[in-house]
Length: 131
Image 1 (cartoon, rainbow, N blue to C red):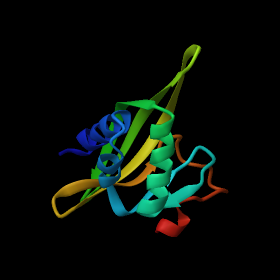
Image 2 (cartoon, one colour):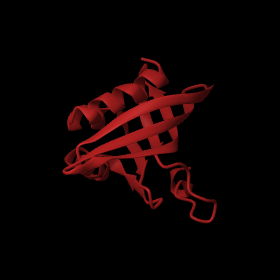
Image 3 (tube, one colour):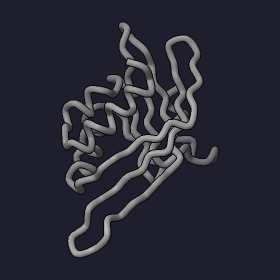
């Protein structure tokens, strides 16, 4: 599976409320960056974030902008479009420029860092502990 196919598989799993499948696409040492630039690390933390998204009945569509590859790493620039159904109101739609870092290990790509709302400014440095 290519890096682009992996992010689309993640979107499909999240949209189908397949929590375990969505979580399985993250590396064991993966990180999910929330809208307030909090870096949530590890499967338990990421599971909690994905559970919240699923509970809100989110639908996710991924639009690829570009991919840069270097060895076992792939940096994907994408637009993630979140749609949340709301009772008695039009759906809430939010599109954001996303940055996703994937790592290939044992022949399979996994999400290492998913920053759906982009990378925080340099002062916040949410990724400093990852490197």
